[in-house]
Image 1: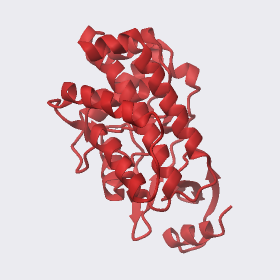
Image 2 (image 1 turned 90 degrees about the horizontal axis):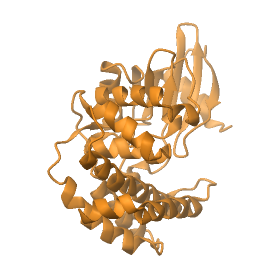
Image 3 (image 1 turned 90 degrees about the vertical axis):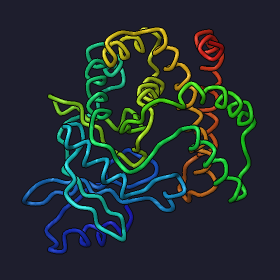
Length: 293
């Protein structure tokens, strides 16, 4: 445990009447569960140099508040600067097993949750996955990194996909729908970790959830039908294209982390894993048909 956690907890609650434990989860940040007489909180401690990943902490706070306002995010209690310490109410519940997240009943709950997000108040930040992967490339190059062998081919595919999504109206999106970012409190699904949130393409969120939960074609159809009213062919094709972009973004995130992070984590393997999954998506007949449509 980092010896600095005590000092940071006292920075937020100086009275010394706090106990805390480290929560598992993300790679980039530390999260503490802080227990006090008046309630239980989560203290998010930002990782180093996260602005190089395109993270704006003020936008994260705004997006978390917006999600809470529509009933799908944790309540923001405080944001302490300059450290960028985010304090939210602790959400009692469980991270659902990934198998449950693939069940039709849960997929319908996910669709309702994402509709609430996408219908919520706008936030200042933007998330354009096509620009994100280019920015990650530039950041990695500027710091002496090299592009993996799959980068050039992926960039060419991305340039073919982008015109299909250029005119899409932007909506508030989460953009990092890993299973660990969902908490089921028994009544609702709460989404946490809004650091990549911004105005963007709702279909990226749907595809990001789909690929991160490895939904098969039937599961993607259930999700889309619950979200949009029917699993129309154009929507399913868009999901296929954006599943590719989701893994391209995740792979490039790993590339950047590999050159800027000091964490003891194999980011090269992480990037390779997502390049490989991206390439599997690109080999699917449905993806090729969507790209050639």
